[in-house]
Length: 264
Image 1 (cartoon, rainbow, N blue to C red):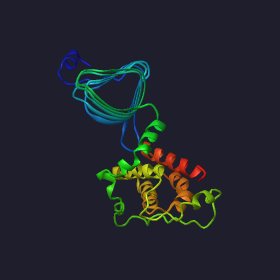
Image 2 (spheres, one colour; image 1 turned 180 degrees about the vertical axis):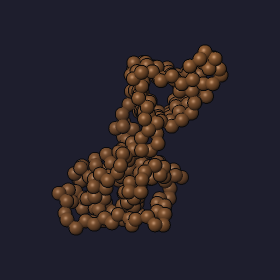
Image 3 (tube, rainbow, N blue to C red; image 1 turned 60 degrees about the vertical axis):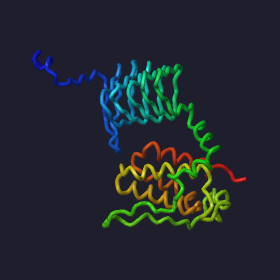
Image 4 (cartoon, rainbow, N blue to C red; image 1 turned 120 degrees about the horizontal axis):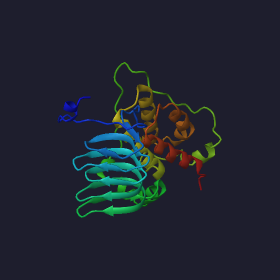
């Protein structure tokens, strides 16, 4: 490359040796680099990781990532929305905005005018808090009316997955206590939060036809309060998903925890 080209105003991207860049089935870009990583423009990412250095988000950048991991500091000058940040320190500079659900850091620095939302230490802590305020969460306009069916599949698509429960499951006795749950009654908190996560994931339409139908069927079982069929089939249904996203995995964990816990 000539000096004339290097000195031009055209932006130059340098990828250090050892850097890994790939895109998942949801179209989210993941970057794993041995040194420092600087994000100058807005974007949606799966994982941003610096093995030995720091990650900086520039002032004009609005970044959304599932996970941000770095050995040193995560500097935020612009905006960051993430499910989890793992770093030695998190530093929000003046006027920075960060919405972080889970934070695993040793040091936290928030500049004047900066804003941090979230900051839970574990998913258990998050779930316990939401459980305490489940009634208030259910009253939010977003969840006030949950009777609407998920969007119908386009014409020409295969028929929906039909769920049958002809054989008794070893955990059937634990499920029987929920069989008589009326449609007007509220879902148990773990299943309520699982429904929220699945509906959000379904709306993204980032899956293929088969995975979309599986998520739709899970949503239907939860909305119709068919907990017997759900308890007998959710593991099989989730096993048909291709590269499930973080929300689907968390929804599965919530359902698995609920049906594994003996009823009292």
